[in-house]
Length: 237
Image (tube, rainbow, N blue to C red; front, top):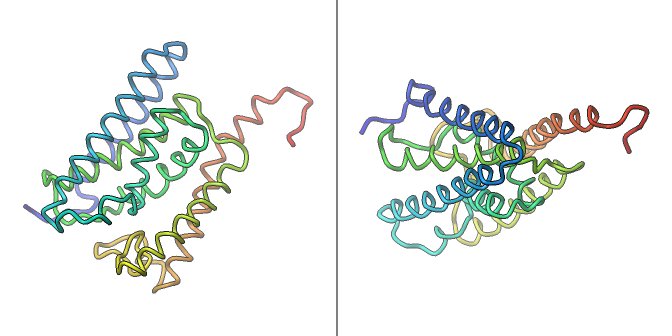
């Protein structure tokens, strides 16, 4: 199996397929706004895909380390994002959907651009990585732009604070278990965006600042839409 080639043809094809699926499903749902059947098929189908994919990925990873309790917990950022997507798709809960929107269109997308994989397609772990990350990103776009579960005012701050609280919990686990979840103890072995953010611990602070900037940018479409939908002569709070 050949090493993974970043920004090679297969990498770009994978990213393009994810983007095309996201746009296609959002357009489908917008053209069928009154069809609950179509919406249910899309969201439950995505949830079922993620559930099955997470189980397959877990089984596929067992030969690497064996069945370790810590590997079953959603301690990796993207594992937790998969669970968020499943819950958001199944329930359309506002708080979960908001967090998925920010996580799925920030960290998950960055992970696909700079994947922590060492083998190219059709390696099963490479396929699993892009399938799960891709469908999480698709789900975030579908829920916010297709199903209309839009972030409320201040959602970016709530997502940012939750992300930092989550990181604190993971940091304690890393320290006690000698792990490196969220790359809080060291940068990944594969090239990543963290490589340009300085040594430890400065890259953690830089990544946190970048997360806030991305979360803030992701709020802009909904702020503009809210202003456009506000009746003439009224002012925002």
